[in-house]
Structure formats: C-alpha cells, structure tokens
Length: 278
Length: 311
Image 1: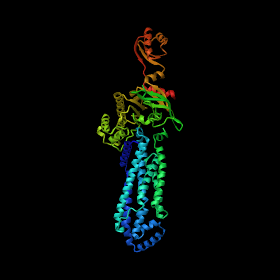
Image 2 (image 1 turned 135 degrees about the horizontal axis):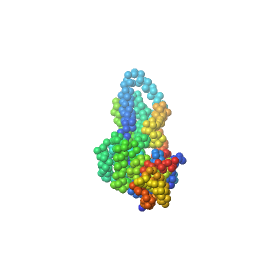
Image 3 (image 1 turned 60 degrees about the vertical axis):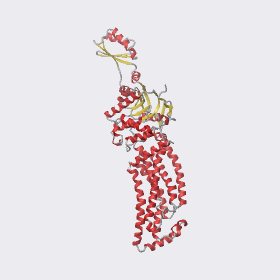
Image 4 (image 1 turned 90 degrees about the horizontal axis):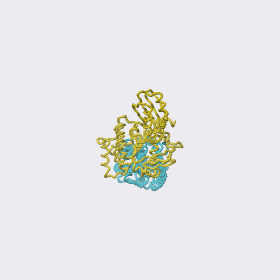
C-alpha cells in the first residue's frame, strides 16, 4: 500500500465533493435537522404544549404506568422516578431517535462514494486515473478513505453537537447532564462505522451498474430502509435498541461488510472496469 | 536493441466478438508510429492492452520488454497516455490537476512544483494555472492533458485521437506540440488517429487497423509499393512519344506496365532502383525527356486502398 497515493486520492476526492453541492448538502442539512431543530421542538416546544393542556399530565402518568409494565427491566430502571416531561424527552430523543443517527454516516458515505466512483465514470475522468501506475488497491482504499472518514466525522461531530444541545436545552427539564445514555456510545463507536462502511460498499456496487451520480444517489436511498425499520421497531415497542442489540446488529453489519468488501474489490479493478465492453 | 513495443498475435474479445484480432507489430525506440483506423477499429482497446488495463484473450504484448498482461504497473510508470477525452478534474484548478497526477505517477514531492511550472510554461498555460479547466477551451484542455501525460517524463507516449473535436487551429497547435516533443526529446510515440493528414505529418511508420485486424504496417512508401505492386513513374516527353517509341518502352525489361496520354508516359517499374534503366531505355529509343517524376501516394490514398482491399 502506498500511503502517499492513498492520501492524494482521498484529498482529491474530498476537494471534488466540496465543489459539488448535491454531495455535501446532506452532510449539513441532516445534522441541523437532527441535532438542533428536532431536539429544540421536543425540549422547548414539548413542555409548553403540555403546560397548555390541563389533562396532559394525568394522561401521561397513566401511559407511563402502562409503559413501565412492558419495558425491559434495565430501561425501566433508567426512567424510574422521572416526571412526564422528562420521560417524553428521554423516549423521543434518547431512544426513538437513536437509529436516526445511523442514517448520517450511511448517507454521507454512500453519497460521497457515489460521487467518487460513478462521478468519475460520468465525467470520464476515471480513464486517466486508471492509466497511472497506482495499484487497484491503492485507488480503492484512497476512495474508501475519502468517503468513510467524512462520514464518521459527520456522525461523531453530530453526536457531540446533539449531546451539547440535549444537555443545554434539556437542563430546565432534566436538571442534570443526562445524555448520552448507555446505548449511545456503542452505537456511535461500533455501529456507526459499520453503517458508514456499509453505505460506501453498497454505493460502489451500485456505481458499477449505473452511469450517473443521480442514478446512484437515488438507489443508495434504499439503504436507509433497514434504519427506518429499526426506528419503527423501536417506536412500536417491538425492539429495544439497547447495548446488546447494538452489539449483535453491529456484528451482522460488519460481517456483511466483509462480504461486500470482497465483491467491491473485484468490481473496482481495471480489468473488471474495462473488461465488460470495448 | 529491444523494441519499445512488441505485439504478437494479440487478441482481445468482448462477449466473443474480437476488438483486437491477431495483431502483430513492433515499434522501435524513438519512433513516431501511427495507428490509423475508423472509430471502433480497436485502437483504444490496443492502447489499454499495451498499458495492462486489459488482459489479452490471446497472444502477447511486451512494452520495454515487460509483459503488459502481468507488469502493467511497471509499464505505466514509464508511459504517458493522452486519452480521447482530456479526462481532467474540471472542478480543480489546473495546477491541482497536475499536482494530483504527479503524485499518482510517483514524482518526488520536491520535484513536482518546478516540473509543473516548467510544463505549464511549455504548453503556454502558465497564466491559467490557478483557473479551473472547466472554463478552458477544448484546445487548452488538450494542452493541459498533454502536460499531465508528460509529468513523469515518460519514455513512451500514447496519444489517442489527440485532435478529435478540436477546431483546425487548435488541432494544428496540438500537432505542432507533438512534433516538437518527438523532435526535441526523442520519445517513442504511438499516435492513434483517424486524421490522415495528422498521421502523414507526424508519423514515420503507420499501421492501418479495422475491425480489430491490422491490415497494413510499414512506412508510407513501403505500403504504397505493396499496394500498387511497384513504382509508377510519370515521364513527360517533348515531342509526344511516337508509336515506335511507345513500343520500344513497352519492350524494356524494367517496364511492367505502360500507359500513354498525349505527351505523358506512365510506366510501372518494380522498384525505384529501376528508374535509371527506364530513363536510359527511353533516351536510347530516341525519346526527349522533359520531366521524370516517381509517383508518390498520399497517406489518404494508401489508407483507402488498404480499406478497399479489406472490403
């Protein structure tokens, strides 16, 4: 592996992404929505709404009693003793919203991956790149780095921002530093990198079948479906995204990634790229 | 001396259809070799095979004595390719394009800056180095792509349709640069083109390819001799040749064919070496020669004759 070449490719790809608004805007928009707007609505708007409805508190306590009965014991212990507003904040922002933070690394890496792989094909720049002496592996890992590193920076940066916003705006409700909860650290450190790589590898495989960035961009949208299912499971009470589920799910995604990596390495080779047609 | 390129029965098929079919030729160091053929003839596939981007289905190709199928990486360190489209990163400034490719070609970091400046000056782009090629004319883009191909001082250059899509002025400027490169640096150049005038100006030897097959290979003079079976000599006489003189010329052992049109005689001889004997024969038979001109064929005539033979 030639690190000088890998770094050069990664740097070049990031420069290109910087110039393509379609590629970087999701990296900016998603964190603003997830880390500022939604927590703001829940933490500032929620208590005001409850205050305006005289029955809300009683209804909430009834719902909570029912909820405590069906929650997994470790989760029930976490919310034991919380009032209605605290439980709402905890459920919405720390539990239900958790899977949304997997969308960020997934989307970021898949969009950069699509821009990097199919974008080069679309703009016909890939041929000059393949005529260089850089090995297929160096080209591949340079491009991989260009997609995965920003995806993780966006995910972890957003997580830090989310932590800051939740503890700041949540202080009047919670009266303490309450976030991150136990599931978040393994999710961000174990599952988010797995999803970042999954997004990239899937976009490489999609890129080998399509000829434009837009096609790849639309197809990579399918990747959010598992995350949405995870969220639906959590909201409906079918799933509890706790540390053990995160570890198990992460293991599955990492194993899937291994298989996809082997496929992607085969797809992204000079002989495969030029071998299909003259 | 090891040939720069040696190709033997090279074949590459795509889904059973040959794009390069049993091609054999060699290119010597310092030569400007032209590969002529229509679009889709197999020129680009051949360049890819020679640079190890594709594996051959059959036959062998060696570049600098190395097997292109297995030593592509080592070969590409010593070759520069100008692709049919300039393949530039249009969102990055010209200088960043060159810096990136210089790194890819392994040019040491401390040599890269001076090398880029030197090339931008050579290609008259020094005033536009910080601009993005997206705003360049086609000719400027092609000049920048040429600079990119030369960053690592390659010994062998492949130019794939270097003037395709350029206006005549820009095409002439690119051709002049190629001629200058060949003249000043003595690099081996393989020029793939369907522009016959360009090939005539730049190439010492040519190959004609169509539907993957190499139909002809050699210097234009060699090809003309093969195609027209010998050399035609146009002789102008004054006065016009008499019947006796024509018969005498037809009777000469060196004259393979004779045609008459007024005061002009066209005589086919086996090779240019027979021209003095032909002249002596005409003079001895009483002919008064005003002008003798061995007929030369343009590359265009050669090319179409080759293609005609194939069809």
